[in-house]
Image 1 (cartoon, rainbow, N blue to C red):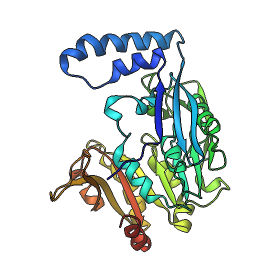
Image 2: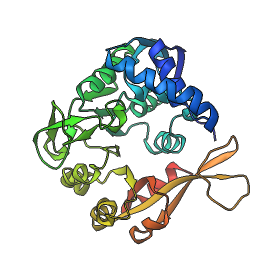
Image 3: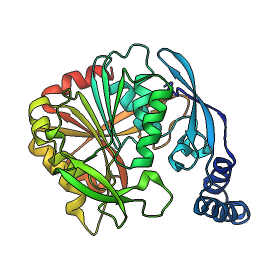
Length: 321
């Protein structure tokens, strides 16, 4: 299948070039002589406040828009690291591009700089609304900046909120001090962020919810219990297999199972082969494999799960027919 990528990098700052050298996948020898020294240089540059801006074209529904992006946010590596090309997280990108309908309301929870929000908004046929949630201040600034620079405020509303199972405040930080995509709530740090339950917010009811909350998926779902019961959205969420703490892995599945949701994980089928593979190729098609919560530990350690209300199964099938 053809994977859409509305992003086109025009130039990288020096910091992004060092990041690319440091974190590109390499063979052992080149990792030793290129990757490791580049990582040391990259961390040193960050520690002294080095920054810079890369240049990017976003092909929006209104036409191409030239924007600048913050080199200090390593999650922009999704645009230029070889292992992220030609499309970042291809199975999830393909999934959401089909799952979110043209008139839907899409919640992008854990949006970072907005890959998925901007991907959906770039469809010329999309007439719905997008709510992008990103709590960490510097990352939220990147998200809001790209939405404003690409003139898509009419399609994407940005919320500087950490969604959880209660309202209030908490601390947040990057565990490794570098990767914004690994920012965690409740970690030791001096950055305070706002907490809120989805049920507490007065915004349009969601048709599709995507959650990438770094082990806080259960809290997000718990805080959205009224929305889930009332609006019955499709839900896509990240799930890690923790053999030492199976209850953490299974808790989001158990919550949604009690709400009469059914579960699928995305993969790829290629040609006439009757098997599911992890990597996409030019002639592969997206496959959605049903599974039961009891089967979760037979699946890969990290997957994105698609949860579908049982009464919306026919609609779900139609979106992928």
